[in-house]
Length: 501
Image (cartoon, rainbow, N blue to C red; front, side, top):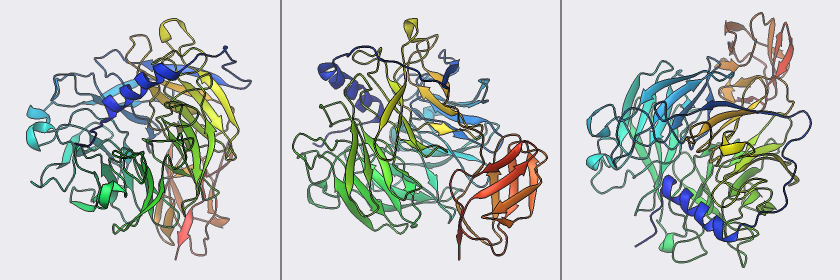
């Protein structure tokens, strides 16, 4: 029987393996000039516990996320079933929804992934368990409004042969065609890639393990990334050409219609210095290449790596962790407005031993890594510990935000922010559109804006709120930076807006 891995137990397993290999090195500096780390909120169980995922900035200027456990109701396996929450950039948290409020957890249980805001204004997410399929054990997809009204859109296990998938651990991504795309991890099957309409019609576009020995990959646990070429890129935890019988994982490309190409199989080198078993999503940087992490491989079995891979599949290992600068990066990277990539390691650092600690780090596209913060710097790890964070998010105020699964005042996880001296900017909710398309532009202190341009071409716009402008892609616009002139100065978009024919 193939190895069965879910978000909770696979992450714990990684930490236990880390105990065997981690040697704490001499304490290193945990902060640099112009950096400020702040614990914004500590969960206490009633408002949620153990957030595994990162946050998303919504059009109202607030950040939204999930906790895997805690809350008000008991889930499928006898533990508290998790929550969805809203938190302001300054740290005021509101619980939006307690999962398992409906019998048999039809409304979901154990949301391990983050949320995504659709162009219709609603948030979308997944739960690993719950839903209407087989005693609530197969997972589901949900929609939730910014005020907390939740709708179950799809319950996995609806097809008796299991081909629609089981256990969606990863979050969703919305493509320009309006569909949301995601993966299921499998649990005894190879896993799937699917698309779903915002109203809930699901189509399975690929079943993994379609090739002998699961050479095409198995058990995807990460969200997809929609690339500039129109295809999706992702990773699988297991499968691939190496490490029989389970496989050390892959990087793949898949078209919106479901044609999959395996780009790379991990542990292609003796001893796995190129990494193994990736669990995080990729990020496409402004140079066109993709960047990602593996929690295993590198300098030791559980040290982990940061890698770069080209759209055609050439992989370069940029960094291997050594314990003192972190251990086991389970989360994805984010490229900030300074061009550098930022991420977390779940363990290690200046105060980490075994399954504790963790770090925040910065790495250049060329591979130069700097440890920015080591968790457990405060007694009892009240600053947080073990950031499994799906990915940090850079708020339009310039600061980075994330979560830790444990630590904090009650030991049940935190929300934190890290300022590294980056200024405010704007970002478009979608990064691709045609002339005449309506575009939502997120920012900070947008009231009084006097101009919006798409690569220098003036656009008609409306200031909806201090955090939101709506604009129309103007005739003559070309691919490039979106700029908003406000009373406080000119704000530029973090990535180019692509104007399609």
